[in-house]
Length: 598
Image (tube, rainbow, N blue to C red):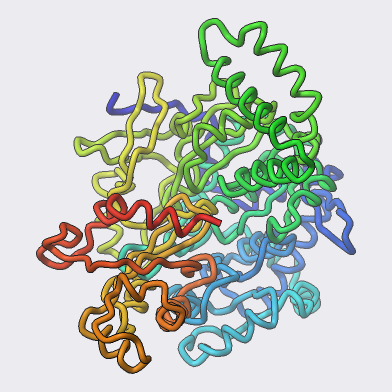
């Protein structure tokens, strides 16, 4: 099949914007808890009425500070209640939110805030504020920096006390469906992040159709979702806005360090995550079982769960024997795992990177279905996902209702729909390259089956997507590492892996000089020195220099020094000296695997 589409299930408002959602919720569900905040270690519900009041108060402060309609305002924070509060406050003031990853380097901050022309930035911590101050001289349009940890919300509330309700009502109604809601900066192959402009229409089309297609998972007054992904990432934004649109109760926590405890205390019915989260749940459970001397039981239970899930897709279904084994392990193992996931969980949605068929079957087999999806920043997150009632494990599901997926002659996945971004900010060339005759060219290779389920089989572009869903542009850090005299070539790896690694070759001309200066045997080769502690320390310094240009999530954690050069003769570079990444990855698969071994 070359093309597949589904009819829209949600009609985008003709002349509304996302702030309409919080007003509607306050009118229709005033006393329903639509969001929860963590205070003194305990969850505190916030009703639709209360949330609207807090958003309006913060918006008044932004207006009083001079934020004008269409102004860009940066938001740099971990995932927490204030992120969502301030996101809606910026929109209510008529502004455009510009997310900044809280792990971003000063160089990245300067580019994002400078390129977007942000007039202000809401940051979480003193460290974030200091990072902005270190590049403040490169941000002439930046007038305000508010710090959440220094009572930014209360300061805005106080500052806006004199702003009338009528003025904030007028501001919140200025944006239309086609007005920009946010500019999300996403990594490009050139290394410079591109500002992806997403409109209110984009999010209405995206979130409205996701909620309607998965309506049994979005029950107002009953369902809840725990968000621990970065809201700076478009997938996190999907969760935020879809929860408000449904509405269901949204809880926000900064990271997954204490995920088990957070799941147990919040007890969500729906979990949104990236493959790394589900890998962590599985690996932690297996490690605990092994530590308790029950490793063999866990492995048998896991095999049973996978076999049971696979059998569900077979015409005859699970055999009687398999059903009995499954029932036994449900009492011994599966029920405990569901408790770890909060005890009320019905399903999860996974995106950002491939989940893997085995893990998909494992979770469905224990009674916790993980629905895999696929999307990009340019598609406002999910452009395809598995329906709750017709899952096909191993695929990323059917197209978002109201959109079209087409497979080009070369296998590239092309997309069309209201959820597609409008343009790249200040970058007409990149916009023209990505959008052609109404179709977005994803750069990914895929196939469609006869039922319209999409499978992603490869990448045309070089962007790496880690298991945590972080997009990494190799060029930035590779160029920095190659700047070291000892380094000839560097290839960043980590697609689908838990962190970023690198393969490094040594400069044949400089290595003998370095060896002599450090008392190494004359004529020592890269093969002989690759495990030398002093050499490893020198290369580590090169890696650290490269890491300084990127965020922590994009930084190289481990590397391997290769014994040979990448050359045209070896088949690893083109005549123009461009790296053949797929060839290198294949030829040095063992070296890459060694990076990720404990």
